[in-house]
Amino acid sequence: MDFNFTEEQSMLRDTVASFLQDKYDFEARRKVVASDSGWRPELWRAFAEELGILGAPFSEALGGLGGGAVDNMIVMEEFGKALVIEPYLGTVVIGGGFLKHSGYAGAASVIEGIIGGTVRIAFAYAEPQARYTWRDLTTTAKKDGSGYLLNGHKAVVIGAPFATHLVVTARTGGGQRDAGGVSVFLVDKGLKGIVTRDYPTVDGNRASEIYFENVSIPADALISVEGGGLPLVDKVIDEATAAVGAEAVGVLRKLHEGTLDYAKQRKQFGTAIGNFQVLQHRMVDMFIEVEQAVSMTYMATIKLDESDADRAKAVSAAKVRIGRACKFVGQNAIQIHGGMGMTDELAIGHYFKRATLIEGLFGSVDHHLRRYEGLSFDAAA
Image (cartoon, helix red, strand yellow):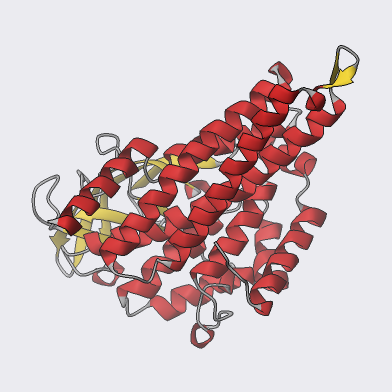
């Protein structure tokens, strides 16, 4: 696929890459992952004030850089290369996506906080029984005077320990798995009745189990059409899936590069293992998987503004290709490194863990194969 970046997009890539090279080396990240806080607020401020990248996908009218999904793709790929922990995906891609697409009256002021680095958002959508069915919700928001009472449990809310706000999907009507009755709320995380249990994830991030116990939220917390929020959820999750694909590309590049470097240095029988033809073939196969993931990520990103069906098909096709690449490249990187590839001291194991988590994020390969098949049959009918 021939995909040329604009001069501004190339500058964005170079700026982010240079900053991360200086400030986000592997040993610094290891220390942060092992710390109590699990992230660096001072770097988040630098993203906002020094680089301005928190405004990359927002229009100039909202105080942003006037970019869009391609800018998110560029940032996320560079973040993947550095295994960045800070909550760009939840805040800028997902939170910003809901605010841009919902027509929410208070969007401008919240986006101003995102761009300035004072608002951080986590997406509370997953529930233990739902797997990848976003509309399978037991969390409810019932009318209470002029507002709502929010009750329920959200699982594995990535970035929630750092968040100031939560985007929450809840049922305001219909049955547990109905397409209708789904609503989306922007909730201040500090409200009474919100109980969190924070924990580290295997890839070095932080997440929370979040329990809503009669949480009183105002009417203006509703950011979707009441009961009609599922199309909005699908659109934003597709955008997030494409962005995660870009992150995966960064991770895959580092897995492949790290394996090539290791194969040139590691010797067996008096020669570098990179000279063994069978491993050369294996690393070529890894390279092909990486390049296919790049092309599919670009394709999905440029199709995000197309019709709902075309967007969804492109994203699912990309996620299948990316998920398979994460498994193949990641597992072969570890196999070629041997047991030391999984040690904490070696970067390759950390990239492998992140690649493994990305495989299942926003839908597994099997899930997206079924989704693509269903969309294709619907189009043919």
